[in-house]
Length: 528
Image (cartoon, rainbow, N blue to C red; front, side, top):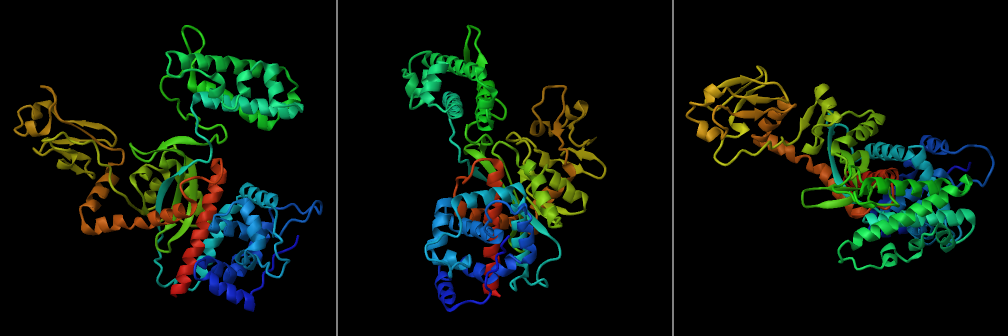
């Protein structure tokens, strides 16, 4: 396999291009100056290990050059087709790819070759290795002074919503979309057209330009939607019965994917009617599918008023170097704490473990938080607000919690023992005649005040204490570093995903984080 051996010395033409690029596209300059360090012999060995050395087939392009192309593509946010074009027409691309001496307008790679290389990176987890490599190169630049960098590792973790690339549809359109794809797949397998398949299966609705156009009803009429749904389901049932009669060799993997999607939508969104037929399910099924083309997309909420459809991107940032060291992507409906396992795995590959973890409350119950505390590290986070006390009544903050003795004392001085995660009930005989009862509880006569204790009450008390001091509040604000990294990533990528599926979007996040790390290294180098 041919190895990429880019020149180190700069030609006169390259110097002119670097001078121009340095005014608006500074990363081109850094990539040209440090490409031989980023893609050294050892890293190129790792990239070449992704290929089988059989000697058969067409010789692939040098993997290091293709990897550089993916970085430049992420930096410029070019599509695959644009990347192919720019590799032959844009002088900055040609300079970084060491192609200035090649024929003008000749692309460095094909669109298919770029896609295949991306899939190869994903299959071998080399996209994670690329992120690690940018961290290594960044720390070797002269802008990172080991004497000034703290010995402890402070990691900030945060997330942002990412709109999925798949189309979000209601139940009728989901069913119709999946049915149409099944018909198209059977037409391809049988060498015929979709109309012929729909006629044979007696499912004419699937021949319409859209399912709702084919249904052609007054949607405001009573029971119109219910009748349309049942008419569509009957035709889909006839289609699936017809598919089942065909040769098993026709049902290939792409077709199976849509058959399973159709069955999943039916199971999640529909329920039988007592009168016969089906109806839309009351309530939303757990983990409901919202897109046919992207099965991993889900409904999610950033807040009570802000809903989004797609994914959550999670990053872990070394707050002292500003480098992104870990990435994760989860469906939008999954809690943040589920992403910490993937973040820890990324850091473990770099032999990193946080001494101080700065997070928001969504990550507080995660395994990462438990591991940091168990190792003697510190967790910086705002405490849970707890249930709001009714106006005019004492709240939990007015009670004194003694973690060491396992007791809680009310404002009147009554002491009760407690267990983490349990509800403390104060003695009704003490609460009944208490002078502070009107300010403490509205419980019925014969009952005392109750206080709910958290499972992590010791940690919550420490977090509440930190919030009361100026130094503690200043420490909480240090997490803004990871928010800045997310803002930079969002500014480059935009609000919508480039790819479909959790794994491909994780690749894109790692690639964008790698570009971000290289920009940080370039900035530190200029400041040094």
